[in-house]
Structure formats: C-alpha cells, structure tokens
Length: 58
Length: 188
Image 1 (cartoon, chains in turn red, purple):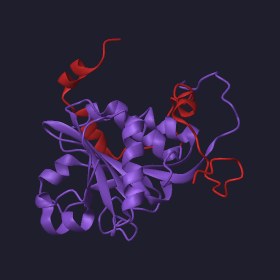
Image 2: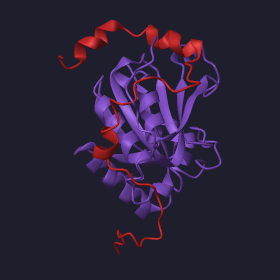
Image 3: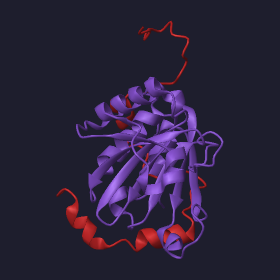
C-alpha cells in the first residue's frame, strides 16, 4: 500500500527535481577543498572542441 | 577577486545520504591498466548546495573524452562489482545517441540525491559512460535478485528521464562471468 503521508516512518529527506533546480544558479563557485586531480583535468581540457557544436544554441 | 557580493541563504539543505563523484581516466585505461585502477574520487557532498557547487564546476557528459566513466555513488560504496554492497547487485542501462545524455544524467542525479525512488535504499549510484558512438547511463542497485524492487526502480527511472525506449537489467554476477554475453534478466 501507499503511505506517502507525513506519518510515514520513512524519514528520508526528499527533494523534488523542481525544488533542487531552484538552487542550480545560486551555487556556481566550487566548494572549498575542491580540486580536480591533474590527470583528470588533462583529460577534460583535451576534449575535442567539435563536441560544442552539438549544444543547443544560446 | 572571485568573491561574490550575493548574500547566499544561510540554511543548507542536507541530503539523506552523502554522495561521491568518481572519475575514471580514459587515457590510463588505454594503457591497459588494471580496470578500476585509474578511478579517482573527486568530491563528496552532503547538501543540495554542495551538489550544485560541484556539478556546476565539472564537465557534463557531452564534454568528456571518449572512454570516460563518470560516477556518482553513495559515500563508502565504491563503483566496482567487488564492493561488498554492490557484489550481489546489478544495473539498469539506458543508451543515448552520442553527446545526448547530459539532461538525463542530471535528472538521474537529482532523482537519486532527492530520494525520489520508492526503493532508494536499493540504489548504489549511477555512472555515465562516454563511448565513441554512444553514451550510456547505468543505475547500480544492491540486490539484483529482488525483482520487485528492481522493476520499481527501472519504471520510476524511465519516468524521471521521460524515456520510452527499452531498458534492460543485468546482474553483475552475469557480467563478471559472461562479459558482453551477459543477458538482461529483467526488461521493461
């Protein structure tokens, strides 16, 4: 059965997609202690730029 | 100089679980390193705010090099078959045209961290794999033999992705023994 009321024993912190998306543009700076390991940064920077053409136009 | 004058809200929104982003370096894999040896954890986050701070500063799948695997798993669970939590598990997989998985990857992450799955306890994490001709997103779960839970997760995932195509579930145990010959145990 469905027990989606507040009385549910399940205490999971649930957040809907729309709720989470509200925060997307407020937190654009990297968190403290965030470092991309050099060998990974290398791969990211080396991505073929032609992939950009697939993106939606701004 | 990068400081912003925006007054950010003080209260943060804790997530039910902590999650860790992992990245598998494709150039190391091409050197025939042992599978998984190039895997690096990038960051562990515990709040909605931290999630966006990280997500907004990492490449999305369409910007990753071919061969890259990018994981987001519950903290303390390594994205490997051998992990004690994953060992009896399996995965649902969806295939996308090359470079077209960004939105679905984000929707998968939001559904996981927002605890939108009825069987959220079953979920280990998700991985997006960038390959030469396609992108794949897989959702890893714990108890592959629990058919009802896996079907529920698969059906909900389809809704969250707004995806109508076929989706198959493979047991890690089959994948280990049969590799590419492993067949879907469940399909929806």
